[in-house]
Structure formats: C-alpha cells, structure tokens
Image (cartoon, rainbow, N blue to C red):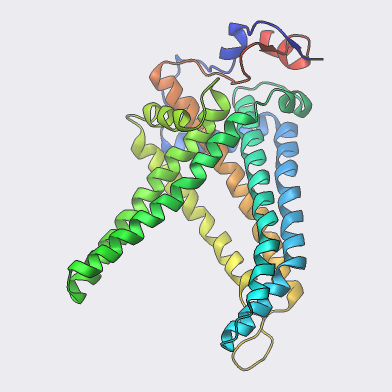
Length: 325
C-alpha cells in the first residue's frame, strides 16, 4: 500500500533519458514514437483497451439514443418544421454524452502520456501501479484551459472576417477572407501543438498545470516551434481519412430519389471503425508529443519528472522498487 513519505529526488528524475545523446529530428521523433509501444507492449495494449472500450461504448449508446432524434430533427428541418421540444430533448441527451466523451478523453490522454513515458524510458511498470501514481487534478484543469482555446480562437477569427467584410469591397474582401482562413488554419495547428505539449507538461511536471503548463510548453518548445508545428500538421493529415469515415457515418441514409444508399448497420459500422481509428491516432499523437516533450527537456537541459505530487511516495510498491533499482 502506498504511504506518505518525503518525495525522493530519484522519483522526480527517474524518467530522464541520457542527456549525452543528441536531439533527434522530426523523422526521428516519429520513429521513436512508433518504437515506444513495443518497449512495453503489455502496458500499451492495456492502455489502448482502456481508451478504446469506453469510447466505442459511448458511440454505441449515442447511436442508439441520440441518432434517431437527430434524424427526426433533420427531417423536420428539411420540411421547414422545427419542433422546439425535440431540440430541448436533444440537448438534454447530448449534454451527458459531451461530458462523458470529455471525461474519457482526459482519462485516455493522461494514461497514454504516463504509459508512453514509461515505455520510452524502458521502465517495466504494471497498469495498476501506473494508475495509482496519477494526479488527476493537473490534466483535468489543464484540459479545461485547452478546451477554451478553440472556442476563443474561433470567435476571434469569425469576428475578424466579419470586420473585413464591413470595411472592404466584395472582390477585395474575398481575397482577404481566403488569406485569413489560411493564416488562421496554420496558426491553429501551432496553437494545437502548444496545447498538446501543455497537456503532456501537466501530466509529467510536478505542480505544473493550467495556464502555467501552457506557459511551460511555450518555454520548452523555444527553438523547436517549427518541429512541433510539423509534428501536429502530419498528425492532422493522418486524421483526414478518419474524418471522412465520420462524415460517411453521419450522412443521411437516403438520397434524393429515396433509394437507400447505405444501410443503418453499415453506417454504424463506419462509425465504429472511425471511432477505433480516431482513438488510435489520438493515442499515437500523445505518444509522439511525449517523445517531443522528452527531446525538448533534453535540449533545455532539464531532467524529466513524473509529476506525482509532493509528499507522495510509492516506496513500498513495485513501482518505486523499479524506479530506485
């Protein structure tokens, strides 16, 4: 059983890889991320199942409870008939699902980062010991901060585009809108790379979460911002086929002639496969950024920590025995 004890320096620095090795490039980071799961296959497999299982369950429940109502609302909208009772019912159904997906997302992100860090440094740790060492408050708070970034960013971009429409002529406004759209997309990829690294920081660094974790991410990525940008760009490009599958799964079953294009079972199958692929790509993204975090730490000359909180020691457990071995 874990017990309170002074937090040892060996625990806060045991993830530090050899600083004598040179920093790796973009391709090297992806290569290390691909190799990482094999270094502790059992732990990574258990992590994958813990991430995929609740996601697929939520998708199944959403398909059973929310999809019929969404289809009804869409049909009524096409007939210029909107029933507010249906909209309220949909909101009541969607709210717990949104909360459920967010909880599963934070849980999956946290255990993926921990498992990736252990596997990357070739530490043999059981899932039970890993889960017992996690400080959930830090990634939860940081995830709330990160969730507001795309909302605020979208409001700013939309406001900027509307302002351009008011002060420019139609032809010039179109060119400005295209320029803003491209610039906003590129900047958003950079912001996503910083927020992803910030989530890794909130999990790995002790007493570093929320805005402080995002600031630390910006500081760590100095000199490697372009590398972080291209890492996220490649990961987003890998996600495009999955978004296409989601689009197919969410599209109408009927065409304009009323002939069935895709059956309900097939549509659900597309959604099920897309969900699994989405979870795997999302998991791989955090493995990539865990490696990137390690490289940024190496470049800055800092030791890599495992943020388990002050005054908490796992000395009597298998985890601490492997750490101090």
